[in-house]
Image (cartoon, rainbow, N blue to C red; front, side, top):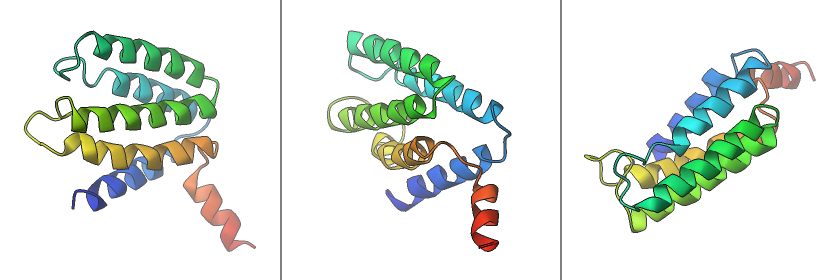
Length: 131
């Protein structure tokens, strides 16, 4: 369950996000990335590094307002930060010990979709059916 549920959450996030029309889909995902960058601020356990990471991800998210590539890179950066927290810091959800590990499985699913340009899942499926 540590792996399956986070992967399903990533797939559900991609599916729900893909229902939003462009350019709002990309902009919303940039805002979501910025929020994820601040997820550990209130107790991640890595001190000033929490602020440094938040600043980096805020910049990447800002660039993501106009670029799916930056959003994808940001989710990969967040994946790495999740792994660091699983090993040395505090979990993203204080009462769920493996929550950062789960997040490290969820985030790459979102990153791959973003690096592919954040396509609408319904448009992709429709195109495959009409082939």
